[in-house]
Length: 165
Ligand code: FES
Image 1: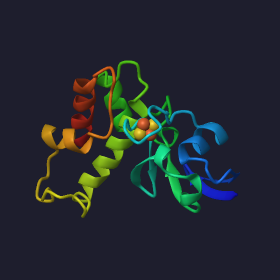
Image 2 (image 1 turned 135 degrees about the vertical axis):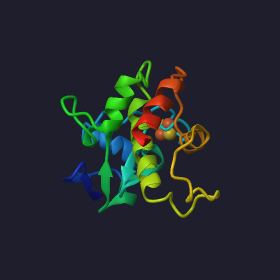
Image 3 (image 1 turned 180 degrees about the vertical axis):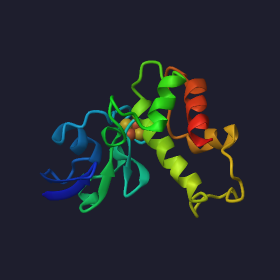
Image 4 (image 1 turned 120 degrees about the vertical axis):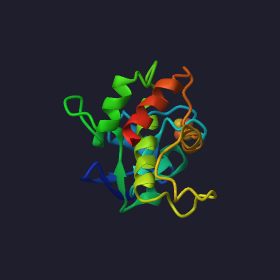
């Protein structure tokens, strides 16, 4: 099945088995291996990418569901020579240990900071729209879908809080 995606601002067309997940399309067909496969069941967040600006677990969606969509992976956020502010904050605060969850942590927190910038999305259950600052409790809740098996949470939180300030 033919699927057209714009990945990191580049139009890509793929011929895929319709059962191919977005994660496998990115990793196995486009060789964008920055996005990681952890659980492959929507539980760890290692596969987080942005689809039309919103964070999704790419292991949970079929690539064909996103025909025509814009996908951003960790490779589209910055480069080793030119890190994004969030990536630089993760380096500064040692926001990782083994590093396997790091792309997902960064993509998810990147989307979260965008949510803050526009006053949080309308689907949040709590009324957070009046709060200008990201608190540690809000951060824990908003990032609860991204697990770190090394428990490098202190550095991850410090990095995100600095980027949010
Ligand atoms: Fe997708 Fe774990 S690999 S949530």
